Amino acid sequence: MYFFLLNLSLIDLGTITTTVPKAMANSLWDTTTISYASCATQVFFFILFVSAEFYLLIIMAYDRYIAICKPLHYGTIMANRTCINIIAVLWGSTFVYALLHTASTFSLPLCQGNVLDQFFCELPQILKLSCSDAYLREAGLLMFSACLLSGCFVFLVLSYVQIFRAVLRIPLQQGRQKAFSTCLPHLAVVSLFISTGIFAYLKPPSISSPFLNLLLAILYSVVPPALNPLIYSMQNKELKCAVRRQIWGMFSST
Image (cartoon, rainbow, N blue to C red; front, side):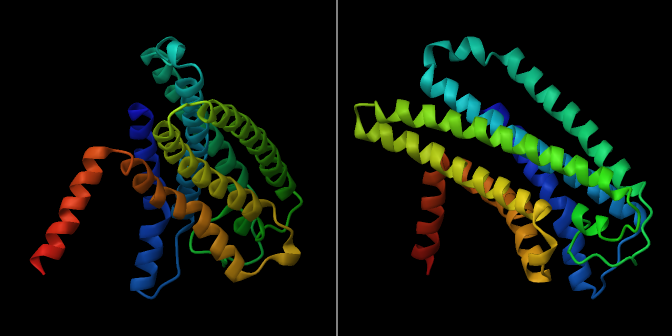
């Protein structure tokens, strides 16, 4: 789990730094410009980190399933070499996936201006600038990705159904509370991430608006990476004690 959390922290850091610093710089310097090369780079790294985060959250759900439902087999199924191979496949596949999306998007002729109605280079906003039927290729790729994400989400839900069934059989109330406090925040963040992301990319144009687009982008690109460190660090007893001591010291000094 800590090996997966290390990768999750790196992914969250990458997701935030891909979009937020540029948006903050534009706000501070009262500008709204980004170069073509920077936009393509931002698209590549954003897809890379967002897709990697999604698949890692699915892997972590499976890790919890094995730990809770098959604890005696955990060391065999989730061996060190297995975890390293999983992460290697994750980074390799998401790199190819991001490269494919970026190349497909920026090979399109863009002739509807150069204004993106978003605080970063988001794929749906870029596709709106295309005046060629070639954008259907990228739209089809997005549809395929959405179907794949939906299938993974079904796998995640089934994993948690098995987890909750096992947790409810725990005789001690304290044990059930600990398991639920670990699983429910993870499930909530994954659900928020998947639902808002799919809706942002597949929503019909008739209900599109600048405010809705901005809200959805923040919910799937900023909120989950910001919440993950808080959720997973608060499961650590030593860290919680350190935070309590820090807060108590602040109140005591005042």
